[in-house]
Image 1 (cartoon, helix red, strand yellow):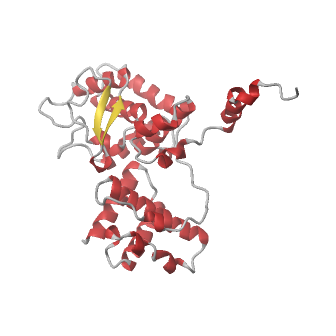
Image 2: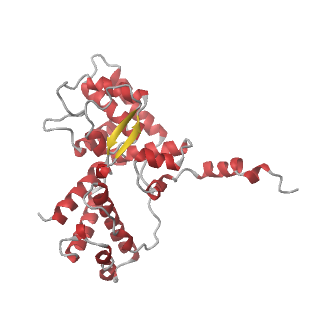
Image 3: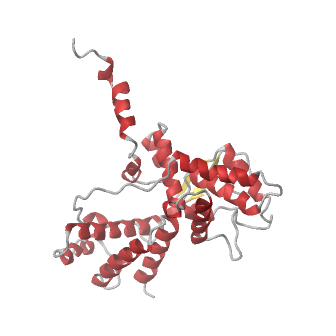
Length: 298
């Protein structure tokens, strides 16, 4: 398997595990990337900006929407390569932007989040409590309560939250470290789960061969959603991360602070979370803008 094929597979695995991408979406990404790799003679992952700039010439006969999709596939792929440390720069700014409206990230309502945690609370009241429920409690507290990526969560060490610190030092994509605030509720949930983990274990969420995989994490979350009466297709670890960001922003969080919490290197990535409801925006303008305090009729 050449480098392109290997990296494309890893990218698609990430999309499936962290973003809950459908089979149709994964197939479209695979086709777009494999075709681009063929044009680049198997060296798409190492392509420079000049080479990437030649791709649109192969798309002249395609519809605007198809060009937009191909550009999006490549941008996301190169973003993945940079974040995972497979290359240092992103050449995708050489790709066309047909001007289509960017789709908003999937998220969950406050009521759906409440239902997920209510079901866990019911399970924690059972005596004796099932270890799987305690583990799920820790997982949801970290995904929704701190906005961790799936890869960051599964790679947590058992010693990560054993002290009294109110934050974690996470090594995220590309090997970058960031501080992640941890709520008291999350620390309690994690410590409770740690009691079920053998002291000799390195990982907080171990498996037979190391730590649980992103695929297994995805399955755990969807199984819980189904039990909670929520459509499993609506949820994934990445959707919980989106909900964390969306609900913080709705609560008044600053976009720059949110950028830091999510570990985004570029503020433009964080700006997709500005899809708060229009009623709140209208209220904000009417109540907070300086002109709203003046009698313009005078």
